[in-house]
Length: 268
Image (tube, rainbow, N blue to C red; front, side, top):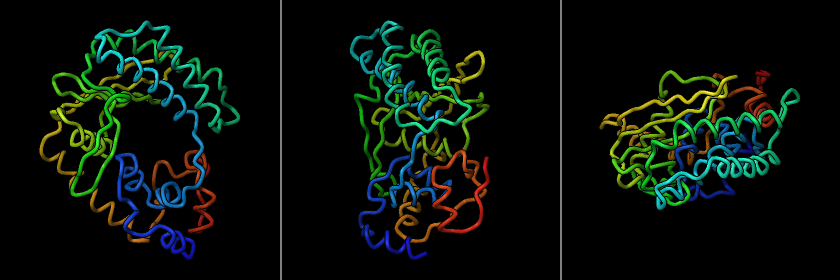
């Protein structure tokens, strides 16, 4: 584990994990080694097609809601689609597409998702803050946490927009902890959260799921974030070969993981 020790020396403990994000903590909870490779060693982490689509869709819809805070009106659909196309081109240039994937087909599928949300989702959203206009920062359990919210409505409901390959049945545990952190970091948030998932089926779907964060849900980040920070500063990082993301297809760091920890990372 000499390489780990060298990296820790290069990054004083007072700096490691000084400011966290919900996505960084979620990575830590899923696989400490993946966190090490990404955030401590800063190894290249090229986007996959799912991430590229999500980034482009998120950018386009975020641009719509950022202006809607003031205008109270949605942009014309084609203007939002144009914003998606521009964001897709930028993301695709940094994406590692698989041999069997068609970037053109994936771009088109993302356009369908944007059109669907602008038709069925956006009209019922009246934001008072949106991602591009309201970065949030707060102390959670004594740990500084920075994030950018998706949409906050006047009644204090947080709305998160995401893309997925399959329809979600519920908001799973790790995601709920991430959402709880968003509530804690967002002035005006009441604990009501809605996750609008755009599903990339043959016929695209919009699946909304709602959750209300009570004291028990909001306690989780207060307890877990300081523990994550302490673990990040410990200098001891273990791979989670049981993670659903532990495969050569889903993790850009599989070669480094095999070199550092031995064993074999499965193909998919």
